[in-house]
Length: 470
Image 1 (cartoon, helix red, strand yellow):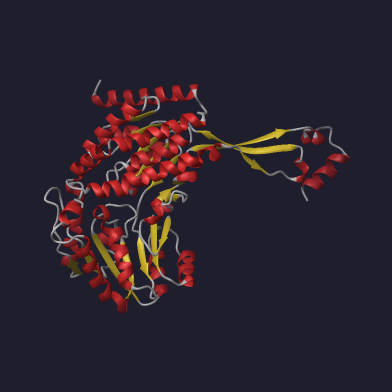
Image 2 (image 1 turned 135 degrees about the horizontal axis):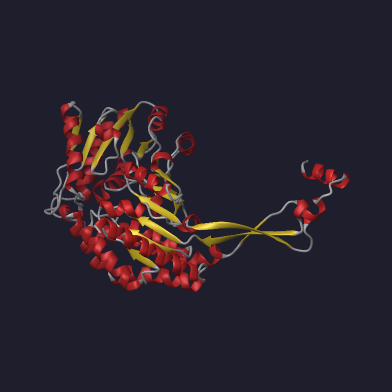
C-alpha cells in the first residue's frame, strides 16, 4: 500500500476513534468543557516563548511581540469570555407558543455535533488552529486539526503540545502536505471549518459535498477602506498603516485598498510615509517587521509590482530596514492603479496598498459595490449620517469604524464573510451555536391539542381549522 493509502486509513481511524469517544459522552458537562478550555490556556501560557520562536523560524522572521499580541493574547481573551459565559450558553432556551398550543412547553437545546475538522492557514498558524478549537470544545465536540504545510515547525510543535494536553480522542493534530489536506477535507466530519483562499475554499467545498458535510468557510477578498471627507487623513493613516503592515500585510482582513478624497491624496501619501517610518525606524525597524512566508507569495507580489511598473502606474516605496532572514518587501503604495491589474483583481496579502482617489462619497461606495463582497470593511468618519450611509449601501463580512482589524478581537461579535469572502460566522456565542445543533423540543404538558383534530372530521374540526387559519 502506498503512502497515500496509509494516510487515508490513518485519517479514518482517528475520525472513528473520536466519533466512538463522542458516542460515549454525547453531552459533556460544564465541568468537562471548562477543563478542556483550561488546557488550551495552559498550553498557550506554558509554551508561549516556544510557540513564538517556531512561528518566527517558519516565517523567516516575525517579532515575538507580534505573535503574542496578534495570536496568543486574543485567544486568552476568548478563553476568559467563553469560560465565564458557558454555563448560560448551555442552558435550554425557552421559546414561545401560540394561543392554540398553550398546553405545550417549547425550548431549544444546543446539542454537540460530534467531530469537527479544522483546516488552518499559515498566516496566523496559532490563532486559526486553536482559536476555533475554543468554540468547538465549548460546544462539547471533539476536533481534528490540519495545520498548513507552509509552517512545518509550527505544525510539528502544535502536534506535540496538543498530544501532551489532550487525549487523541479529544483533539488531535494531523500533519502533512497538500495530499493529506485533500484527504482531510473529504472526511465525513460532522462539521468542517476551513480558513484560507477562495480558490482552495471551492475545492474544500466540493470535497465536503460528497458527504454533505456542513461547512464554515472563512476566506478573504479585497477589504476596502473608505476615508470620508470629514475625517482627518493623518489620523486615519495611522490606523491604516497599523492594519496593513501587521504581519507584513499577510492578514485576511488587512485593508486591501484605500479610497481617499482626490484633493487629500497627497496628504495621505505623505502621512503614510511618516507613519511607516515612525513604526519601523531605521535603528530597530527590522526587528519588528515580518517576513513573507514562501517564495511563491513573494514572487506573486513582485510580479504584480512589475506589471504596474510596465503599465506606468505611480509606485511609491517607503525605505525601511527589512529583516535579515526570510523574504522581505518594502511597504509600497500604488497610486490609482487600474481595476484590471493583478494587484487590484486578487487579494494582495502583503505590504502593498493601492490608493484610489474619489470625487464624492457616492463614487467611493459605488466602487466598493462594484467588486465582490469583502471579508472586512473599514470606514473613517465622525458623521453618523455618513457612517449609516456606508453601512446601508455596502455589504461585507464585518466592519470596524474609525480603526482597522479591531472587530476580530471583540469576543461578543460574530466573525465571518459573505458570498465569495466566506460562509457562516463564529466567535463567542455565535461560535458556540455554529458548532452546535439547535434542537427544538416541544413537550405536551396537561392535554395534547392534536386530539381535537383527529378523525372522523366534522363540524368542530372545520371550526377549529377556521380559527387556526385565521
